[in-house]
Structure formats: C-alpha cells, structure tokens
Length: 336
Ligand code: SF4
Image (spheres, rainbow, N blue to C red):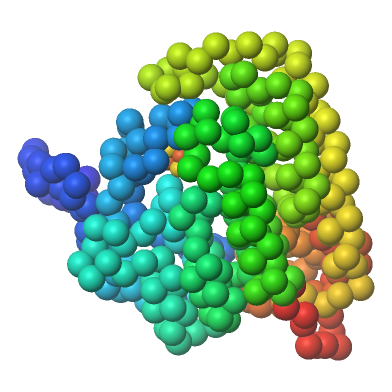
C-alpha cells in the first residue's frame, strides 16, 4: 500500500490484510545490502501470556506463515547474496500449529537446510517450554543451522517461574540444556534473565545464580524487572527495592562476566570460519564478523571482505568478543 501510494500518489484503502489471524504475504521489502545478514519473519504474535509481557496484547495471537512462502523468501535472500539469515518469531518453537499439515519448526529447519548454497540459518526466540528433543536433533543434523541456542530462562526459581507463567521448571530447563550439550558438540548457549521480579527473595535469586553457573552461557541478556501496564505482573506487589534489584543485577553480572570471559578464552589459538559482516573506519578494528556460534570477532582488513567467509586465527579474547587475524595458512577451521 505504501509503495502504491508513493508511486501513484492516489489515496488507497484496503482492510483485507488487517483481518484477525491473517498475514499479509508478498509485501515488497527493502533491505540494506551491505553486509551479509538478513532477517525473515516466520510467524507473528504469541499465545503464551508470560505475566510480565505485553506482546500478546499488542501483537495478537500466534500466526505462522505458510512454509512454502517462507521457503520462497528464503531462496530469494540466498539468491540476493545473503549468507546469514535469522528466522524470527516470538516463539519459533511453536511454529506451524496453525499451518496446513502442521509442520513444526524442525521440519522448517530441515527444509531450509536442504537449499543449495553456503549460508547459515539462525533463529530467535526459542521458548524452553516448546523446545523439543526433535528440535535439538534438527540443529545437530542440519549443517547449515548455526550451533547456537538462545533460550531465555528468565528465572531459576520454580516459584518465580510459576508467577511468570513460563510453563517449565528449572529442572526441565536444565535437562533440555543437558540434552542439547550432549547432542551438539561446541554448542554456544545464550539466554535472557529478569532480575527482581515481584516477590523475588534472596533464595529465589540464588536459584538463578545456580542455574547460570550450571549452564555456563556464553552471554546473558540481563534485565532489571520493570512494570508493563496491562500485564498480570503489573498487579503483583513489587516488593523488591530498587537498590536490592541493582545489587542482585551486579552480583549476577559479576559471575556471568567471568563465565563469558573463560568461555571466550577457550577460542584463543584456534582457527574459526567467520562470516565478515561489518566495516567501520572509526574503530580500532575495521572489520567485524561472526563465528558459526554467533561469537563476535574483530579483525583488520579490507571492506571488500564483507560478505565473505574467512578463516580467522583467534589471538585474544575478552568478555564480549574475540580478536583475530586472517589465517593465511588456510588451516581447516574448527566448528565452534
Ligand atoms: S515473553 Fe515471549 S513467550 Fe512470553 S508472552 Fe512475551 S513474547 Fe510470548
């Protein structure tokens, strides 16, 4: 509609794409071509109603796109030269329930993995409640699917998880992660956590610390709880003081940063296959890239390398990133 308006300069009206449960397919998309990354929505909305989250109220119920439409768009991206494509959905693990034939997310991964080309498939976000062993097996078996799982756990205390209406326990989460680690060598794990949910006690918080120490995530996205009007949690008594929330946040970060630093240090001395995807004249390192597991790599080199895979010898690391140089010996990269 915008395109028509801009090209014809006439008033246009169309409400067909706005019916409940419908997805507007075939919309023209403008993409920034520099870089190798693209994002592709596979579904919209969410049915989960986590008590702190406003998404189901503002984005509506879950609707999945038809698998052949996704495949068509995906092939279009590969043909346009993109090499790192992230499938998007609020909860990709429940993809397909409303699609004819009920394909699930693993079926979609197998189908996209079978497309010709040298590219990586990523996805977000995975809900632990719907992450199945079948999905883990698909990640393990599909060579083009990144060996990276971003599975938000949000809290380590079962009592808080119940209050959050997350639909799993700490034990179930840990057993999913144990299965994934066993099936996928060199798996990179990242997650989201909320600190200071209403009613969170010191004991609850210690459960969260215990979980992050058991899992050892490469990176954590840590949020201080803040009220979202209209959600169930907004009516719960927020009895954790701002100072206490901040103290817990800092304690958690201290532990997580140590883990991230240790895990990144394990890459030093290894040669990794990295997709170069950004250039900046202002930075100390001109180029940025990502490993299969999504680790950020800084290096120096020419802008023309954007969009290419390079074997990078990792020379040092930090809490957040890896630093390396192009390995001119072209040693076979390790699949980290
Ligand atoms: S947190 Fe995620 S899964 Fe939960 S309601 Fe919000 S979008 Fe849905």
